[in-house]
Image (cartoon, rainbow, N blue to C red; front, side):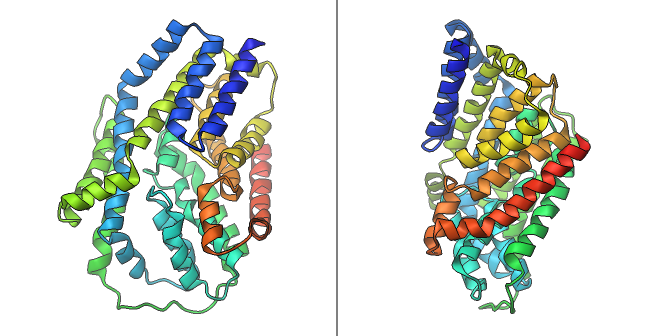
Length: 396
């Protein structure tokens, strides 16, 4: 009984603490879980093993560079040049501009894409604009191999991110189709631009976004590193060096980028996640949950959506559900299709919850009420969940 109480306390710490600092809440939640389920010496041992595991250290260092790249693109004007030279139709602009900006983990990033949507969607109601900003802002997480929100869950599941992308691509297309049907269909007219198209302005900052996944894929397939995350580290480093070059290696821009994006938080998140997971796996809680015999669909689809809804996160729910699923159903690594459906379900809760910071920022910018926003989102989210539930029932 004391073990169940400890697990409940640790989950409460995660849910409440993640609103203030995700990394610290994961670390504290893991330690608290350990104190209720294993000896203090074993808790210290698991913390030590986490902080000295080379793959975790390399992954933390790699992901810490991504927000710096985002800051450099923002401060050097690279983001503005990308958006200004996207010569696509109005519906394409409304979907692609927040998606591209969403790849860059910038605090308050929803406020960067909101003015673009406001500019292009002049004939749309404000709560529809807010829905577009949320739905499409995070859609590339499904297929961009260097999105932290994809790398971290894939690492937890023990699956190559490129394998994950193959299985998630149909769900990515589903999101585009449903987003078009419910959010973009009524956007009419052509885009107006203040300047002529310039490939010279578009190509360099766009290369910063594209070079890392290309390098990562090449390094993983043509070189055999003892630690898989090393290829990710060098790929992101290449992107960072290119971003620095395009900003003329200006120290003031780099300093401002680091201050604004706080990359050390990504290091804390990685160590916090794997501390929690390692202690969870040692605690025996997974075996206790398996005795309850939860169905695979309930654990994957229902619990995934619920945790996305109550946390407003992606990595945090994944760090809870995936270890439970692996233990309950005796898998060493998660089947990629199951991973894709868990990820999709978490994402659906994530895009509709007011706890998600981007939702609040979008509603504030577009002067929209949460009730109107939910009325717009409930149909696309409901249809999406119905489709993934049917596919799960059919194939799993």
